[in-house]
Image (cartoon, rainbow, N blue to C red; front, side, top):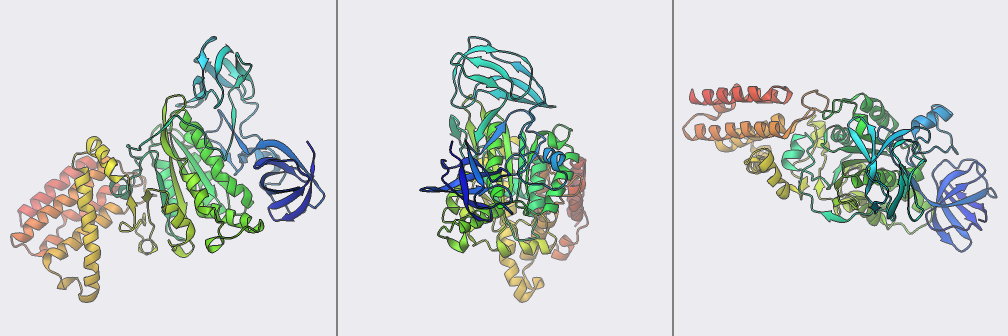
Length: 574
């Protein structure tokens, strides 16, 4: 294939002349063979976005087309790995060049030397089609990695072998001559195919009381966490990555600050998985693309992450993908778009911003795979609107696609109320369908209690406007009681300490029992008020303040039963 020559350079955008290439072809740019991708073709000029720093390269240097699209290597060895935005393993890069990443270095996404023990599930003469399981590899302790027939391939097994193989070795062959191996490659911008999409009906249990009770997310659903600086987006994302009941976690640090990614890279390998009691990294893939890395690689990082997630979904796993943050991804698109001299849209973002966001989020879903298994991808994207302004384009275009909105509020963060999710601005369109699951699996009163909790919080908001004018003492006693119950809900129930060893995760059963206790107090308090007990006596009850300690109690069932007796006893004595 004819080599091209560099004609023009503008940051990460390079124009090559006389290069024979197709859209989204992977190319090697300059004498150092920097990795890039074709994004525009105009007659004899080809525009390329380069995934590495272009400082020092000059016009006239060669450009070589590989003829392939930007693809990721999919196979055993993904779990526990830490990649950059284009699936180069950071530990491998560190060995090659030290602590500072240099450019022009290639590294395979999967180890080419490591041998995996493969056990075949099919035999000679079996007919197989795309998505069928050829066999399994024990990738990490507790997780069996299914080796699938790659999409677009089918035939009769001519030969298949069990044994120890590298990801490049042939493990078998079809009668049409197609070779089979442990690894397959897939272009990141093309969604992997599936048989059928299903309606999400099971919740992704997060262990966060405000989310599970008031704004639940379904497995296979889409959620966004928008919030300004300091509102706790990254902590919320990291907490979800630790505790959600997904089989596999893919965490994308897209354009985040280096110290935040360092925290993830150092903390996550040390964490114990609550489900398996092994390292949390056993079922995680981390993609680290910090704000000082090249913007083109940042733009590619979310596609790399979602493609890896789709691969595990095709095996029948439930996958949760955290993207922190999609705003930095959009900023990378804006920078590349401006260098391409494209017509800008709102606030300088490209006109196709809404389409790209929709394409990314729509790759979530609960599906029946080509191999007739059930798998799901749940996408949770953080959004970082400048100044916390939710009317900016990235937040607004995200809202058009997602169905669960967890709005972070800087005023709550300033009051040290975490997670700082505003219960009046947030919503979940999955709540009605998921309430059926909670009613059956936790308690039949779950949906009724969550509605009552929400009605108290909404009533409090109306009363606070009056309180600002006349003070709380001027309110009728019943409304003063409503304010007190709402305070208990906020402080005893909604607030949750992500760094406390017990409170960081609250099982749905405990969430329900705390709700039940608060609402039991509310009901008895109303009866006491009607029978003539003064509001000051009801508010000053000692036993109700002990509800606050339940969050930090391991043996909560025993403590809750004791508190129920104490509250009843105190009311009976009034």
